[in-house]
Image (cartoon, rainbow, N blue to C red):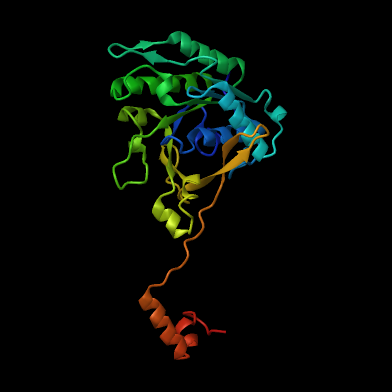
Length: 309
């Protein structure tokens, strides 16, 4: 499959999915990695603006979930389509979904010497080429290999194998990966918290990190504790081709969808962090009250230039 000329250059979507590169979506279990990737996959496959960005080209997307069975994958797809009012027929020929029940992907194995599964790599590349896949999403990283995840040399090799697939097929590959447990008192994840060898972090072309809303953030915007776990932040932790993010983090929220069979499935939706309300200390309130009683508010609150109306 020859290289494609894209409207957005190397970017397929969201300044994360890069043509010819392997990237990572990282976060703790249950934080929303696979659900976020699924909504973005359907956005690309349908060319619909489901989150913050409207795709400028329709992409063929392949998702492989090495953790869940086919029923769970289909439940999640159905929930996204139901929430965003997308006919399932619209995905035909554009979204390809496989699970651990269909086949197991192991690109390399071995505790001592590493054995690369060239047959598996060839099959992945053939699948991508024959179906004209633009974006492939594999999850989670731990299921895609059989080498010690703390071995820097071996894990670097694993990520580079996927990088070779992305480069050879001129497609984008994103891999979902878990974070390690945070130290007590720490609530925010960074790229260094990727579980396993640090070399795998260095091998990814780009990374984004998901962090659940902290207790402090929830308190600042008056979100109840029971609602806090439904909100999470997406930070671009590593982007070799991009300047630092100008607008800071992107926020997302889980919405519960009731399927016709009675199942409840969470779907990732766009959400904006509201401005924190202005709070005044007791001293500030006392000072303000005295100013108001003195009747000199026009002078106190007049703009620096011009007169107060």
